[in-house]
Length: 287
Length: 313
Image (cartoon, rainbow over all chains, first blue to last red; front, side):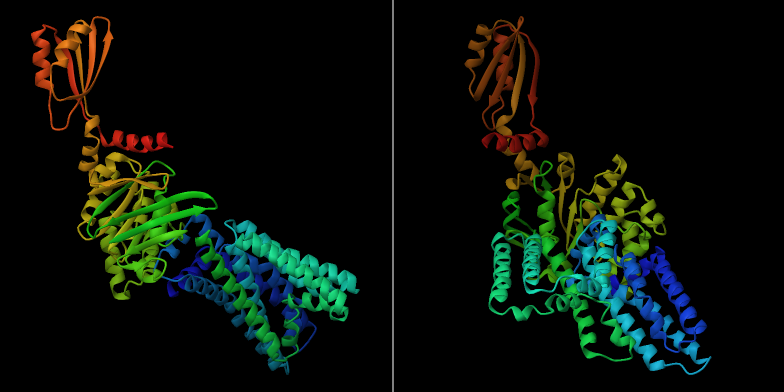
């Protein structure tokens, strides 16, 4: 695990990607910090961070795209998977390297609230809580990027898919408002979600029975709920969509609230996607 | 020791390995031979734990690769078909990474890598980026990576591909010298190579074992196809009567070309009829223009074994 962690971290700085990532991230955050906090004299760093969550969405794919896709393409995964190291350790080593790279930027950000104290009283607790939240949000996005990188051999495809998925999660809560909310439409959307799930199951496991099972059960459940207790569908779509809205959870941190549910949410996203990545790599050996 | 039992690999209906079983004893060099797509690389990938088998077991040094992968992998050094190199790393940096990955003690790493670079003759490029190296050097860096940690078993997938004749000889020498301490399974589709280095040969075709024996024994198996070809000046009936009188012949064919007769004789085991044929032809005053014993090379055996398989289908 240590070997892979060191190798990955080192490769970010020998290949410049790491430097470029840190530079762009910090430059953009610094500009916002300068404009929002210093010029407009807002004593709360979270305002600046809140305004630039999209930067994370734009930049994370740059560092996650190659992390596994490149190993697949160069066949260097053969070295890693035939070495006496478990897949879990390989993936965790890689994930920790990514988190460390992102964490370096967060450490630099920790200096910014202190700069504000030079000009007056800054809201330090709120600022640091939002930096912590920003770190967790990045960690969650990195785990998604890691998983997507394991699905392909091409860095470009990994980057594009990660980008689309991240934009989607970013816009999720606003998209949810646009969808119809009457019971019948919700029922149809639920059926569609069940079918999409079935397709995903098919792509992952290639088992006809399981695919059919998921599709039939999902559709049947949606229709039964519609017929028996349609009130369950009240606001369901908005709720479901907001589960996927990774950015939305950041807002509680930026208010200075150490919200346990958001913390658990981010940690679960990280865990789930790192776990998926491990499964994906293990599964590749079985196909 | 490598034990492969009834290995099957099925890629969605495309069977790459079909019920393969063999054992490689400690200290042996075994050549793994087969035409392209015979399932050599697939079998090696299964033994090293890179991919799983649909059925069957691969046991390395007493550890099942599927049940105790980390222990089994610890005793294997693997050079895949395409050496798994990080192109943006320097040679020494890469080998240090491999050593750490293979859990070589920190105090031993530097000296072990220096020794291995000396052994594989890559010490002169230790500070260069791998992406700037030629194919031959890359192959040797891959081989060096397989040797790192001195695993008991080396599995080499076409180790001499892409090398020039001098390098091929060097690598063969290296493999021979390694065999003193390691058990080696190497694959190739070049017969001479396997013939030159290996104690035993496994021939597979379409995922099935065709033959597993020493090179000499495999040659012996095919000895009956050894042919004596004689070209005689004279008439066929005359020659026929003379030759038919000789014993020890298993099969015979005559072919008349102009005023010459070409005789193809398959001899019985442990019988040499050359003298008798020569005297018989002298007695009827038919001059022998050419007589040669056609020994079957391993190449032909290989073609024969794998080709015969195809016909059977």
